[in-house]
Length: 166
Image (cartoon, rainbow, N blue to C red):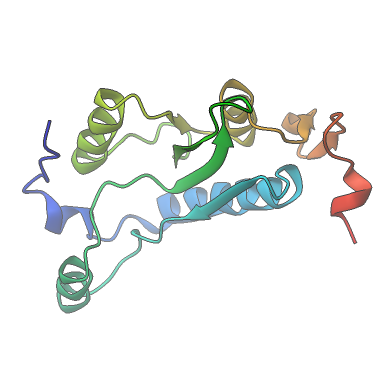
């Protein structure tokens, strides 16, 4: 299956409402803070900087450089398999505020990932990210009672919080 880029490319670069941007940015910051604490050095993660308002000229430059609309917000890389069958794995997370929905290019990307059996999930809260990491079998510190705004973590056998925090 070939990934078909939607004709809605220009729409993917259009600015969103300031309120929507603030909610999504707040979620991104919370998730990034959590991931910096929760993940050890066995998982590499990064934000795919596709979003944000930009001029048509900038959008054209990004498109020429290979930026692809619809790619999910976070990419995770890790080793998986047993001692005899070590391989690299990848997963993607799209962060959306409550009631946020995927754009057309994101739906196309999601379908491509599904077709190729690549782990992916849309998350609306930090707890959703924690659950996804658990489902993917990634070693990480788990959230403890995040709904109160107190994003504490509990220790797992593989990682100690004291080893991460200064």
